[in-house]
Length: 417
Ligand code: AMP
Ligand code: GLY
Image (cartoon, rainbow, N blue to C red; front, side, top):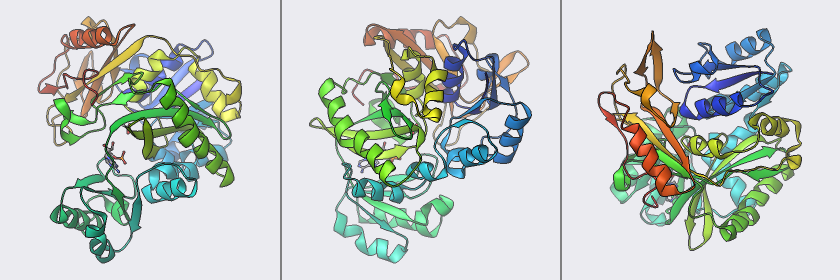
């Protein structure tokens, strides 16, 4: 089969790497891909949000299955556009992608279907939002409703913070239209974990759990990032918690989707806050997590193509997902300054010395050299029966890699985060 993978991150590199292991995959294309993906797939310079060019390319190349990595094309409706053109594509349609595209939509869905989550209230008017600030108490979580590249959530410690955040989101439009509506949420305490699930329109099956480290620096200091590392399975996910999450969250999600006639196929990624053995949903995302995917897919023992096709064809019930007993630890190497301003075009040395899986994100090829091309640059992943050894191996191997101003956390899989 001919496959097209949309995206250019380490998540997409992991998807391509896993699909490449399928005996049924003949050729993989990536749009636009990166310097690591280039070794496994043919990269075509089409942006992930250029729906028209993507569908034209898929028609021209007679692509058998397209796999969408990031949220932006999903929220724009890439799945609907491909389906209208008679092309097979893995991911939720525009309506399904609303779970990530609108936090207010997602909260209303959870309320309607009794899925445990933080209390909330939505506002489209700045003055009304400001009047309500002191009624919620502090810390107060304020979220831009729409997509904001992971930056649209602010935890406000006091009245001034909240006023300032509302001005920035609703008046100054720092997140554009995404901040025209905001959601206030009660602040949840506990430990976060991510659960990624496959969905085929009627059945939901969780993948192995993972834990992401979102803050830029060790000991959870610094700004929130896309994720600085992850490990799988999460220590928190014992059988009791798994059963609890299935009963209280996954099954109600699926029932809710069916009762609202949402044809949800693809991935639902659920961000959870866990406290005293109870889980509450922080957010839904409509695609795989990054860096969660980089530690989950290497543990998967199924042929990924079989699973993706089962989701599209509505036969997920027949698939028995299997996971390696090995634990995986992935450490993200980023450009100094990330998640704020950083420099690009730094020469990456030592990649050929590394004895671990290296998934590329912000990299680009320049003749025989690889240069940095983004904030998160690489994820170095190791597997071992013991978490501490997988962790030690990733850190030993990543020391062989060097680029100017590189940074990484030294406590991935060590603390609970
Ligand atoms: P989100 O984009 O909704 O996942 O939020 C980004 C991050 O903000 C989460 O991973 C949490 O660390 C934090 N966060 C979001 N909502 C809440 C909440 N209600 N209580 C505490 N922390 C939150
Ligand atoms: N690691 C969090 C995310 O992908 O949104």
